[in-house]
Image (cartoon, rainbow, N blue to C red; front, side, top):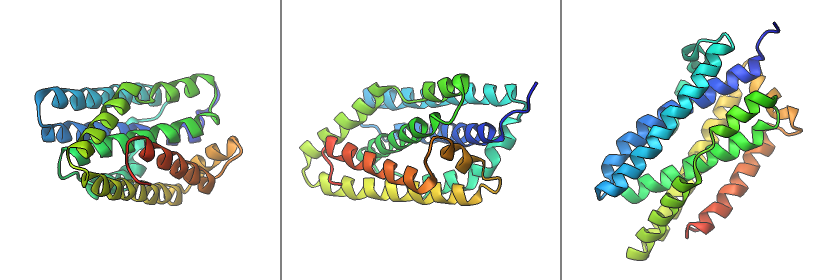
Length: 214
C-alpha cells in the first residue's frame, strides 16, 4: 500500500479544524437570533458543520493520520480569524455565516481539482447546502430593508471578514513548512496568490447579490 499523500493529510486537517471551529461559533451565534425559527436555522447550519468534521476525521483516520495532529498546525490561524470577527448582533452573525461559508466553499472548489477521485468527492461533499446561503442572504436583505443604514455597516463588516480570512489564509500558507498545501494548489495550475485573488473576486460578486457594497 502506498503512503498517504501528505498534501491530502494537511488539507483535510485544515478543513476539519475549520469545520469543528465553525460548529462552535455557529452554535454560539445562534443565541443572537431574534426568534426560535432563526435560531433553529443557524443551529442546523452548525449541525452540518459537525457532520462534515466527522467525515473528514474518519478519512484522516483511514489515511493513518490522527485527526488532532493533522489539525494542530492550523489552530492558531483559524482561531485568530474567529476571535477577531465576533459578531455583535444577528445581522452581523448571518453576514459572517454567509461570507465565511462562501469563502470556504470557493476555496474547496478551487483546490478540489488537485485531488484524486475519492478525496475530491469527499471535499466537494463538504460544500455547504445552498439553502443556508439563501437563508443568510434573505436575512441580510431583510435587515437592510428594515434599516437602510444597515447596508453600510454590513458592507464594512463583510469587507473586514474577507480581509481577516485572507490574512489568515496567507498565515497558513506561510506556516506550511512542508509546502504540501501550496503543492496541492499548484497541481491544478495555480498558486496561492492566484487562489486568493479568485476568492476575492467571487466574494465581490456575492456581496452585490446580497445587497451589500463591494
